[in-house]
Amino acid sequence: MVGNRAARRIVVIVLMLAAALWVVPIVWMVSMALQPNDLLARTTSNVAWGLIPWPFTLDNLGFVLSSGLTPRWFLNSAIVALGMTSLVLVLSSMAGYAFARIPFPGRRLLYPLVLAGLVIPEQAIFIPLYTMFAEWGWHNGYFALIAPRLAVPIGVFLMTQFFRGIPDYIEEAATLDGAGRWTVFTRIMLPLSIPALSTLAILTFLYAWNDYLWPLVSASRPEMFTITLGLASLQTNFAQSEGLGRVMASGVLASLPVVLLFLLFQRQVVRGIAMGSGK
Image 1 (cartoon, rainbow, N blue to C red):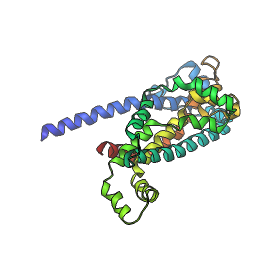
Image 2 (image 1 turned 180 degrees about the vertical axis):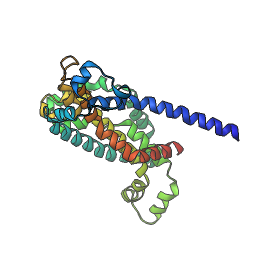
Image 3 (image 1 turned 90 degrees about the horizontal axis):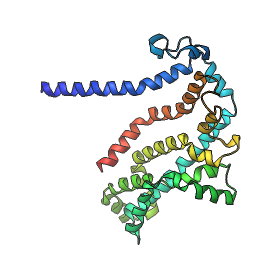
Image 4 (image 1 turned 45 degrees about the horizontal axis):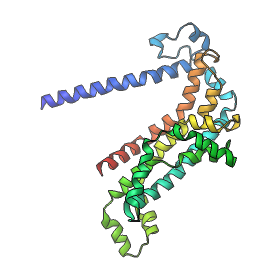
């Protein structure tokens, strides 16, 4: 018994040390974003190895917020991320329910083909996507930023596995009561799948907010940049940047929404993954 407690304490200590090592670079980035550039030009370490922002200033954050079209870029990222998340939830839940509960012809062949999309690098389809959207005149628009990311194989897989884990008698009881397929899906299956939907929503939002490559390809007008692309356009390289503090401030502003989102909904993410793996 004593040996088990000692082993658990050692594991906890090791995990705490690993977590501390993971957090240190983030704290350092925030600290440098809150320090004057003239101080950082001389040294990147001050009190407590640079982890304490002293002297304290908000000039770097203010500069980034007032530079370029930063408010518009935040709005673009919010529209793209929320639009993509909503549509992915609709498509993935419907596809997952069909693969899990509806025995349609070709299901056993189509499902592996959908999962095969997991092994295809997204960069491999950039050229055909760009050519297709250019022919249709869709570039520099919200639809062009959202549409290529709606086919999410991992979302279909997650929802399919979750729906398969729901006992059959629940659906059979609703059918005996006269509920149709659509009623069963919307009134019973979707409420039961809220943990999986929450997990998929958070992961999709994080992916959409942090996406850089496709907006770089599709958006050529500054007013259609997302926040990641817009902040990157403010500094072509380190030597031409406005200072290390402003570089770090850009990183803080770009990552702050997704960090807050994860902190607010981390329980739903853990619960959804645990329930999915348990099923």
